[in-house]
Length: 629
Image 1: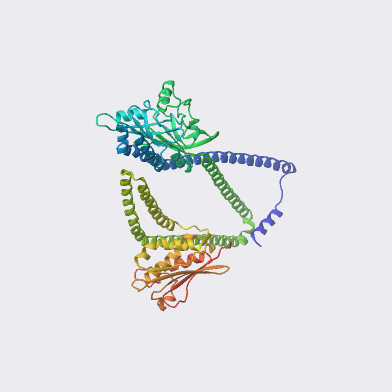
Image 2: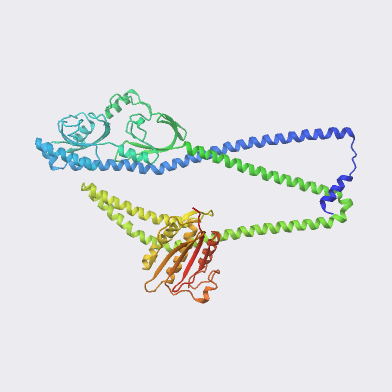
């Protein structure tokens, strides 16, 4: 007779000693108290859950805003550099033309033929440099030559003595003014340079630059960018409707100064639809409200007094972070409630069990005592055994993952020196091209400078691909398998070992690319296996004549086979039987873990790694399940 049967028998034979009225009244009172306690508990849990969700959502939103501000802070220098680079590039044009003999001749002795020749020359320079217009002004403020001589809104003969950029250049040698065009009515940045004469200035060379290209670059980044001048007026922005608006409200005197500086017509210089709310900014963009998070800084010496503000759209990030935070809080609190409920229920059952044992102890002590002790010992032993087994399995899995990661980092350490050595040459080349670009810019050879900069970009992308390969290989491999092409894993492994392959003068034969050949696996894990096999092949080929490694793949309906062969001395027959056993190695400094770890990774991916019979050298074949297209 078991424990449950004994309890039921006692309940069936226990006499009822209470009166009828007690039996009809007490259950009703007990049920009322139980209902009240459950209702109160449920309401308390609900209130606490709502509070936790609100707090978690607020904290997650604040963290999302801080992250957006950090992203904006990281992108701000690049946005400022784009603007400063365009200004400095265009500033070289008046600097160079101010010393040009044709310009000096025209300003010294005006001649219609000289004007026509200079007009064509300025037009060619403007087209090459991407300038809006380039023109030469005499000392009296009249335009003598211009690149838009053949256009309807030509500056030829126009007088600009009232322009700040003209007066500043005549007085100080250089001038800079962002203003609305007097002839074209299109805004732009005017950069000027004085042309020196023997006694007095001969005139001024001016280049007008539209910032449309800079704004287009900013707009492509997805950020909201605007630039304000000394008076706080927005002069360049990714939101066209904000142009010639102000960051804050200006009084009449300030509006007069700003209007005169910008020389705008029929523009009210009203505040932009931007309002600060704590760490966020609420703005109207294209007629729709938007919440932004960002930061600002001075543009720098290229444009004194200008400030650049870069903001990112915050609505999606805040909403997503709030929902994730609230969901996390709800799930965490629900788990706590479930755990508490299970614990409370377990204690209740334990208390009921102890009460039942106490009640029947007087009648069944002798019969139940041995059975109870036996059950307790069995339960405790089983629980301890289960806990010990689960703990051991967890430790084994953790050690396996750590060992695989350590093997990956060990391989990374072996190849890092070779990759660093490979980066030295492109880095040195970047320095040479950068120096050449600077000299070309100083000489006014923008096309040659652009070629040098293009070479720098290509070398930078080459270094970036190497660096990304190292970073990807060093990451902890994800456990979930995805559909990947075999060519990607082979490319990654060969890229990581390219320096060592080149240094050892090993000829590598790889299969023809086949984008349809895919497997279900983790790319980092497959790359780790292939890097181990290629490392072993390179070690075996040291000192061998005409070293060669051949990587091939074949496929069946369900599997893909990747083989790595070398023409080295092959494997000693004595080591073949222990090849995939831990710490079995033929290398002097080897640990004998590379093939073991690679074999275990292959098994985890549902495949296999084996030594394949081959004529000369050694051949290892990796088999992986093929992904169904």
